[in-house]
Image (cartoon, rainbow, N blue to C red):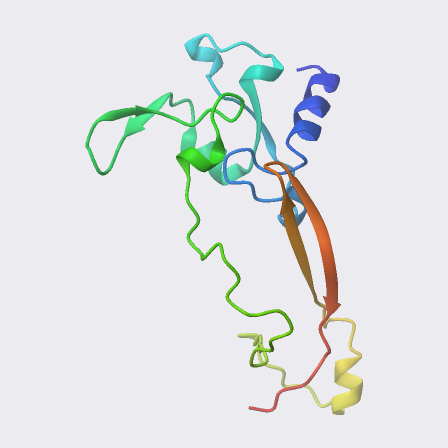
Length: 163
């Protein structure tokens, strides 16, 4: 596949899966170029028939052109990212309206590791250990149907929880 065609598909998709809309940058993996209509079914290798796909969507879809609708039991054509409108085929599993009013606060979010620490370092020395990873929360806004914009970034303060 020509490099220019691959870059065209990646940029058109704004570096996110064209099926589930998950941004590639959060996966640590390169997304795949998928033939929407598989080559074995006569699908061409052109921009109209190619989609940037995460490994999960690409492996789930495979070379299929259709599936069985779980509600009606009828055969249904699969979503085509270049021809179909995403919102007409998929819904959100979370509320679309804001859950919190602007400026509202929530209880602190605590992330815990299943790995314990049994070293003999003092607490401050342990918090500076290179094995600890700094984390941050990034908040994105979807603009239109294809563009994700970063709104904010918040570092997470390192703390040692003793219970």
